[in-house]
Amino acid sequence: MDSVTELITWCFLVTNTARVLAYVPQIRAAWSCTNGAVAVSRATWGYFAAAHLSGALYGLVVVHDVMMATIFLGNFVACMTLLGVIAWKRRQHRARTCRNAMRPTV
Image (cartoon, rainbow, N blue to C red; front, side, top):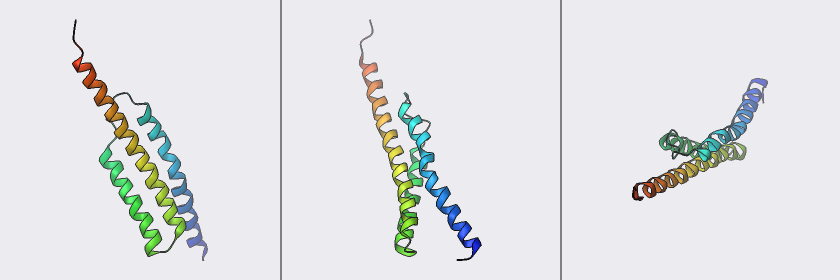
């Protein structure tokens, strides 16, 4: 492998592995949100998840690179974790809103 290819490979490995950790602040923010995490787009994160899954499949099936597939799979799992937290927080917020709307006013 020449030095340019090796440099690009290492850049891909480092940035995409570290990207898994970059999801943590977004997951924590959604987790602590009290308004149902409405500022976080499920469509955007769902698209990111689909792109990561296709990257994992591409790495595994097309280029036969298990490391590449693993990195993309880790990012897919992080996106799905965030989507799960968003769904949970929205369900929780909706239930709380319904309970408050049904309380009799005195």
